[in-house]
Image 1 (cartoon, helix red, strand yellow):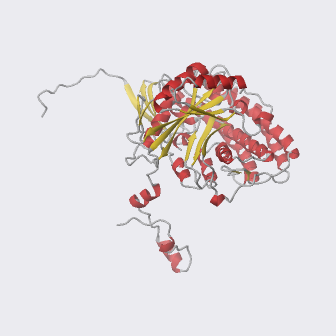
Image 2: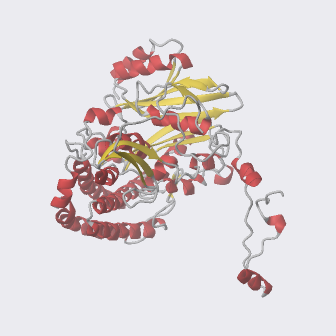
Image 3: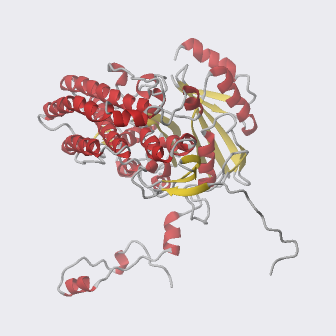
Length: 189
Length: 380
């Protein structure tokens, strides 16, 4: 990416209030913005700087700070550079605006984040379940969800002990794992 | 017994019926479903239904050491697993500031391009089968096997090679391997005219594929389409050239494009990419003997490895499109968050839903295979 374009992008981003821009490498720019100015930033990047490709929306659960971080990665086919716009929203109630009217791929990512983190995106076209259709537990990608504890609590580890194996063990063969070495506890009755 | 205010509702006959296309259907790639509403033979509405291959990779990766995840990531996309491990390894290297030795970078390019050829041959096979031409499928799978033989020899694994580690690659090449890779490339190249006669020039395929599943370049850009599907609409964009990683900026290759954006164009772009991949591999084979040195950078004890705080977004061009990893570290021995952005998360859901509408029922399978959608990438 040429130096001129870099300055041009910096000048453009200065128009946004409260923005912090950090250049990570020649083609990667990190921008931290307040949550309410993100749509304005994306509109500016898309309309005036050619960042027309929304590569992904990533969500990070910062449970200790009681916040979700949403990262919008937009790519420009003209300047061949990627801007990652970071925002923080409160973990409760976990509501944010949809950017579907700017970027259609957002529809998939917002639906995915809604399913995995429970964030509701206002104005998103489809918030139905997609991957976890038969799941009614808490959003599983949240940090407080401990998958191993959930499994130990809700599923029983089936003991596979058919007659042929019992015969084998009686003859001194087979593999016997003593209870204290078994990794998973069995479901408590 | 009816309530007093009951009034029978009469809808006009809609002549529409619903059809569950998948999750176990030869016309669907992997386990995936489309709920299709049909009017006669024409699709009026399609809804993608995923989740049959969800294994919770992103959660699992948060619970495993940085080094353990290398064995996990290739399983996200079965037909083209190598870009997954390279992309993840690149992310960890960037977080740690590791410099990957030159030789390792060339070996990674070799692995990626071999994987691309294998994935494209597999896709042609599946695509041909949707139009009833099973011979191409058998040929494609058989020729892919030759590449899997190469993988087995130099990485130890046929499908999931687990060849990369953060900092480089695991093994040096076996003796005489470059000669064997050249022989395989010569053989695959000699097979291409046969493939042309059997499949690409076959009127059964051409007539079915031309004009099927058309998208314009504007639509493709708006829908977030990447990779060969985007190049089939006439935009010459390739992450390998335009956001270069490894040593792709030192290699000479073309970016094939087609104009029409239909199933035929998309397949043709992949056919032309095979030639370019063979060309890249020949350059790698010619260059490798002169690139000496270590194959991995020294890394700390991988079982007690605290990766510095930070976040990184790495991209590679997989055989299906733009593959990205967003990795966040909180300075601990395990990743704090890994987000996998597979190209098919666009192609198999929103794009497929939109492109199926208006097409005939027999073209759905062809549309899906021509998009090269990989459901495990969507489900993760």
